[in-house]
Image 1 (cartoon, helix red, strand yellow):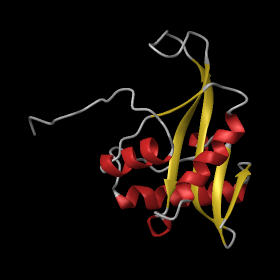
Image 2 (image 1 turned 120 degrees about the vertical axis):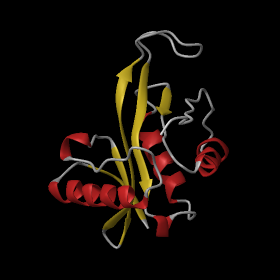
Image 3 (image 1 turned 60 degrees about the vertical axis):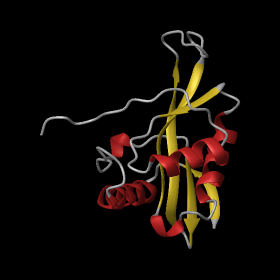
Image 4 (image 1 turned 30 degrees about the horizontal axis):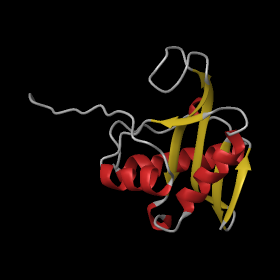
Length: 148
């Protein structure tokens, strides 16, 4: 397995769009839509197996607009837009290595990494983000459908 930062060239864009189709078919997240070229961002870190992307993470920088209990106004942050590893490549440490690669890339430009998730398997996500990657739980938005 090879891990690297990549630019959004045409081949990379095509592979990421193909992976987002697989992600949608997997039906593991609420509201997942297939990416278009305009949805993709840099910095981008990928895991390559025999030259093909099997996992990726990308996001964008932004400044905090309102003060929170832990982030000041104007504080630069990096928000993870997408983080995905093919099912057959999970539980092998790929996600952890991708996260560490992107963290090392952005840490000189911001103080915080944030993300929002809409997974259907919250226990696995909490294990990955909190126990393995050292993130903190800050808030939750919960939904219960009561009328069909």
